[in-house]
Length: 184
Image (cartoon, rainbow, N blue to C red; front, side, top):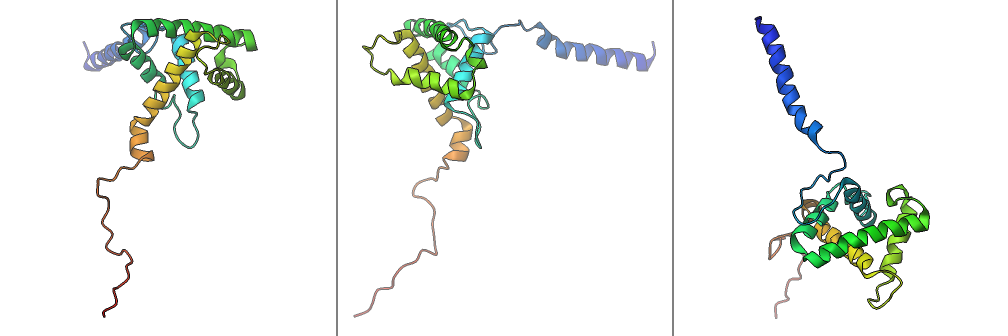
């Protein structure tokens, strides 16, 4: 066997082995591994779109740029009780149905104005005794909003670029203006 042929074949085998895991990923499966909650790719995208509507990309990174939707799902899986997780999943289905009923489109297909309108409508119904919206839908939105804000305010970007922490007691300013005391 020739050396060049052997090197070329070896490069093809290594390249194929590197690409194999990407090709084996199931279509429609979520990118984050969860133990207690079963989320598919479409539901993960919905959570990402809602999080991006809450914290949109401007001159600062948005929720999707910081992967806050994955943070929301991981916190839901690890930190919430089984009843709250079930309520979240039921609320997600109710949210999808409500969007489809109101706009005859999916949330991903809506323009930003209508996305904001939908979320503000849920937020406006804060009374827990109100029957206008199902309890599970309010729980779903509350978890997404709370964990999105929590994830943003605890993100590396926010803690290093937005909130610049100075160790107590602060900086020493040797050129601070002062008035000299008059002698008597």
